[in-house]
Length: 291
Ligand SMILES: Nc1nc2c(c(=O)[nH]1)N[C@@H](CN(C=O)c1ccc(C(=O)N[C@@H](CCC(=O)O)C(=O)O)cc1)CN2
Image (cartoon, rainbow, N blue to C red; front, top):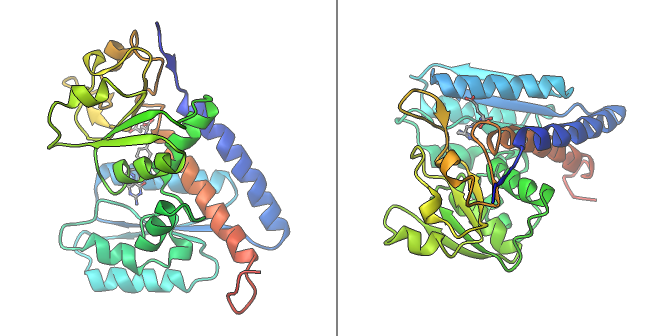
């Protein structure tokens, strides 16, 4: 068996085309969707990601504000910046790029974002809504993974999904979202004993642990779907995922490459969330009641 390579770049382009049409419709109603991205510090990878977000927003006809602050920024100043953005009617989405400098408490910052503008889907209100299956802005990378599965007609219902990694950004939410879709979900992590015992039973394996080429064919049942969320550098400095891609190609039925798999979906879903937030704003009357 040679795995079908899941083309995240192509799927993300389709999603962005749909977002662009929704932006046009909003503009005809006098609304320009606006995203504010806040970057604290000079992490070079973060700078690349926020610039890509800004470029994509502009390409789709959305307003994009990049607010850049020095590493030394006080937490109180970041909180008051978020407060201003919460009250700016031209801003429909607020994203604080992670990681933050260690002197800033990530939870307090996420808590400060108005859940209506929480396009990252990280606020506890958004997380709670997601877990109970209530409509909400969904976290971008997990939502991107769901969209990739849908695009390739991989139905998780009744399937055994093993998620390796329990981060709040990817592992936990993607497992919850697949549970909503009636998958049987197992979470594995650094303390899991005999990982291969679990992964060998999986129909779908999702790896998000940040360890280069960690998962190989020996972990897999033949025909498993492999979703790689990792972004690492190999011994030669080349970008690679958490999966030994070449090694799993003959065992897996589908596999996401790195780059070009899950990564591009993250930004596409962010654009979708921003336009969704702007549309949600239109369906509210002046008192804030949803009509
Ligand atoms: N507030 C947030 N912070 C972070 C998030 C997030 O969703 N919200 N996710 C990551 C970084 N990230 C977006 O912010 C991100 C990472 C990777 C990609 C991507 O497209 N990767 C490409 C490869 C890029 C390269 O060549 O370096 C790929 O996989 O094809 C997009 C977004 C942490 N912080």
